[in-house]
Image 1 (spheres, rainbow, N blue to C red):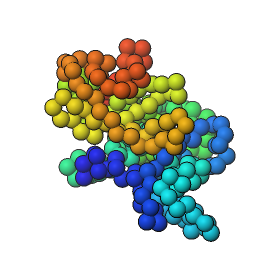
Image 2: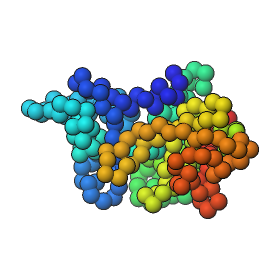
Image 3: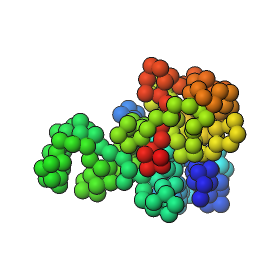
Length: 257
């Protein structure tokens, strides 16, 4: 399955209605009290199952795609940018030609994060070996020990950690599966490159859109100077890309190198 098909799977079919999964990020501010299922990190099938179960309890369920998307947003049933990127790349990596393992096998929890987690949850130290207490941990192994969802504790920083990903300097070297890290007033943002052809880079991300429901959006970058970075290319979101002053850049998982 190619990346475009995987990314498009966030267009759900629920009760005979096609609906685009809206954007949702679980922040420590209202409406955090919703305790949103999967906290913006669900797979398409997980989100669809929750939507169906909640609609089954309604006497007058939404009858249009727009109404259903609004219902999902109000329920916290959406996906944020890192949740989208995580699941798209995880499904991509699980294909036999890429090794058959999910993304969590290739990511890490940094040593400083481990210490912070153990400070808040000292009981988790009992599930680690002594030599693991002060070093980076494999995300899959740590989450298996702690019974946590790897997707739910993965953010933009984890996806673009220099320990597990390398930077791609030139636009002409960008490949499908690379991550584009950007930054806006809302914070870190990440997109997945889904196709590269000739002088065009196509990418997808779950985006927050002011005044709208947001969700998965497909965009393009027109490559003008293949030997230069994305900052020298023609694309609408160039304004969000600041590689000289932040960690913005194109990142490639070592698992896909």
